[in-house]
Length: 427
Image 1 (tube, rainbow, N blue to C red):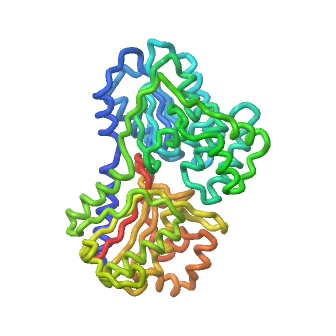
Image 2 (cartoon, one colour):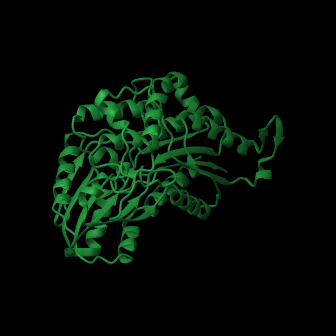
Image 3 (tube, rainbow, N blue to C red):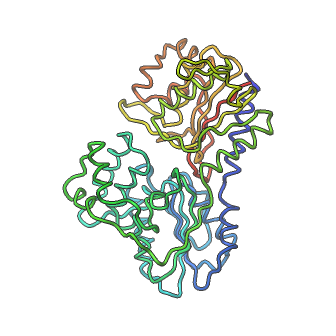
């Protein structure tokens, strides 16, 4: 079992390092010819890392820069750049302050200028300026409803963008006639540009009808003013933006597969678009793990060897994506911790097997953990401490439960953000 944990730690460290955006940003910049004055705006959890890479590559050609990132995600000053740390997953006053600085810079751009726009996950909360008639409290209330109801990130951003003066391509309109060169680190399944950070420099692919359907589906109460905005159409065309995507969840899964192979585990990427409830994902993944361990799968009551699917021990089965949590309790946790904890019961008693799940940005939900890790004896350890798994999950208290059995993964803020990865290790 110790060998499995050593392997898990090596895999976690490798995939974070392999998905840092510095080189990808440098490569994107080398393939772009700037013709005028360069201004920089970086938003998201990876904003500082991306801005630092751009500064190293372009030097004093950058006249001015603004960086807006999550609290604790800045690593110091960057020459000629103003750094603001703000709230995530909910915006706060600093989100507004940083965004107003960006708008002030954007309003002064002319056709001889070019904005280098660096976008990473988390930008929806960090980059915010409510439309007229809406307040920060209105935005926070609606975001809270969306984050707790089980809506996925595309649905959440479909609503967020309609309440903001900088989302849904509106920021690009403010920058015109200046050109925008956008480098994106994607945290959205399918890499939809209008959904990553709610698309501040991308035409909106969604319709008002679809947005209203989200409100009805999850019984969101946005208030009259917000509802009116949600029912209006957003910009569908922009002619001053060029965009490059530098990272994605599929690359995250591939990097996991590479290190697993080096460590002697045959890798299998089963999905890079996992999108469901975290606890259901955990239970499903544990059933796969159990089937591999026992070398059988049951499909329509027919017993089939997992070797028929090409899965043989020792192996690493890899899943990428982003699950959701429906908040019903008042506990502490995140989607990856809940997924891992939910998987614990299904692998009870199985030695030489473990499951871990983590967020690539190093912060899983409103916690200081990146995710969770469980093995065949985690469930029994919880019981020994008097902890009831069902009650823990019902209270969404995965953090405290995993902490009690040394099952938290803590990396600190990583400087990147390309969704989540879950891995079954089986010897």
